[in-house]
Amino acid sequence: MTQHEYVFVAISIILGLAITRLLHTVAMLIRVHRRVSFHWSTALWGLCVLAYVLQFWWVGWGLRDLESWHFGDFVVLIVGAICVYGAAEMALPVPEGSGNLDFLVHSESLGRLSCLSMLLYFLVGPYVNVTMFGNPVIPSLVFPVIGIALTGMMIAVPRFFAGLAVVFAAYSALILSLTA
Image 1 (cartoon, rainbow, N blue to C red):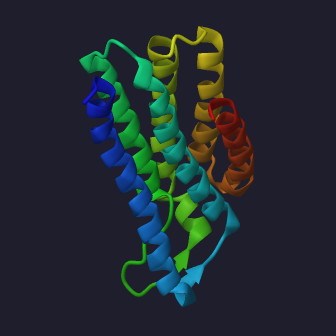
Image 2 (cartoon, one colour; image 1 turned 60 degrees about the vertical axis):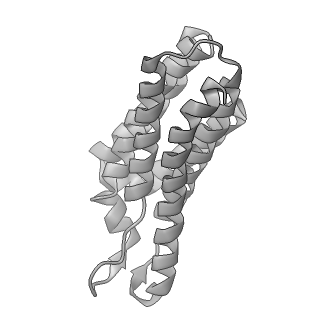
């Protein structure tokens, strides 16, 4: 077993749990669909979070050629995986009790924790890009800063969540096209 395989077992477990959490929540929402007030922006946000989970997994494969692994690298990657899991955990409302579930109200309140988790995830990107991949510093900082600004606005001004979700989805498509 290579160091990469050894390190990515732990990361893959966390990312697998993030996917499981999103899919399980969607299944629960389908079961109680009569109590759900659907809003496209929350669903779009959930899809973006799923895309980042998959993107992290995909980018991790690019690290297979890294010859020297350090404990700090492992910790940063684990923190990134935990942040993506947190975003997945809080992305969609969870049916609890007998009340109605409003997607947009969730996104503008408790769902902001999902945005905070994504904001923290974007702090991991520059470290991975510069120290592990050896990418140039400026692009490695500029793109995450845009993600941090968008998620920061979603947290600070929740009433603009729907519009910002569209901008965030476009930003996510750009990031996926650059890293795929």
